[in-house]
Image 1 (cartoon, rainbow, N blue to C red):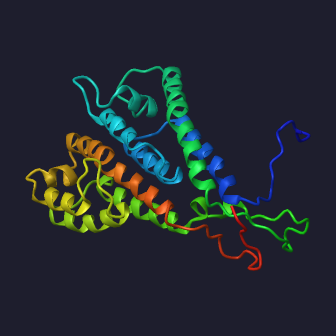
Image 2 (cartoon, helix red, strand yellow):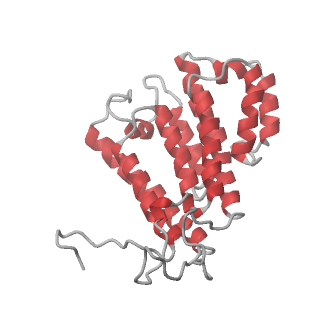
Amino acid sequence: MTTSDGDAPEATHYRRPAEAQLPRTIRTLRRQLLAGFHSRDAVLQWLQDLAVRTLGEVPTAQFATFASEFRPDSDHSEGVILAAFLDSEARTRDIEDGVAERVRQQWAAEVIAPVQADSFRSLRKDAGEYVGETERDSDGDAGHDPQAQSIAMRPALEELHTFQEVALHRPLNGGLDDRAEILDWGDDLIVATRGEPLGDGTPPGEFIRDLHNDPCGDLLLCDTRPHWRRCRQWYICRIILPAFNRAVRDLTRRTAEEPAKGETEDRGPTGG
């Protein structure tokens, strides 16, 4: 069945809104990737977004693999895949736009598509089904609007997403101010990782201690010169993002579905 303009019809009410939200979310992430990114920082922020919106189902090894793309070689500031993720003004490699588009599409097929299936299986185990009538939904086709809900209808995931964005913003936005701020940033990191081990297996508390005591710790997180900024980006992808992913996966398994406020109170989930 199609609409008069030839497009497939889209439902307006959903009995399982968390499940309905997921493919929309993945589609948005994929479109962002296929459009390309304006900076290396934007790629890191998108990878964090991918981790939380796919419920932590991205294989941790993917972050370690992608981190190598942030390491320069003798001629270029990024690997081929990262260069393809960037738009023509941001990349240092001479890659035709059409080739870069195909690389991004292939990455979406090989990485995002399997993760989407894993995320759906993770979500379907405890996705609520909403039944009953409301004044707004008089035909009995009950359901919450997925676009009005938090990530997977779990406000705790939305909150964790914010904590992770804050923890990323401080080192990416010009770096920390000085060595003493590493300890302060550690507070953000522990909340954003929920205490999960980092990419090298180190607990976040020990990581902050060792980073603070490392003679190069302030260069890695504070120095604004291009070399250290590139090292910082590599470090975040290799060490920090895997812990973010683990934190999302852990929290997803511990939270229950909770619709946004303002819905009719006598309608609730049944089973699922």
